[in-house]
Length: 130
Image: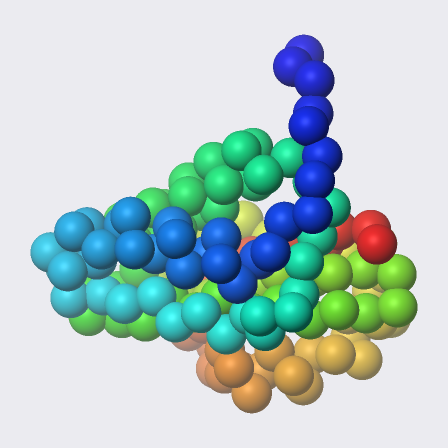
């Protein structure tokens, strides 16, 4: 097991950087990533490992989403959690559910305004303790 080097991670800028790095793959299949993360949202974690995880999620979303689709990334801060959601259309993404389901349900309307509520939307959540 490798040690974690936890620091404050600015989510908006991390997603923006990964999106820029994935531009050639996105452009080749007519897809885009929409970054709906507020610039002031951050989490405390290992930035290198988080970047690898988010990069892999976005690469899978590029590979398995419908052609010419939009991949949406959003985040909200709840009282004890920061929840990050990746949305796309196409095959199912694995869903990691928050243990704080009540808080997640209360904020579901915010996510639906960004990701939509249609049955064709696929999403994945990541939850971080504050």
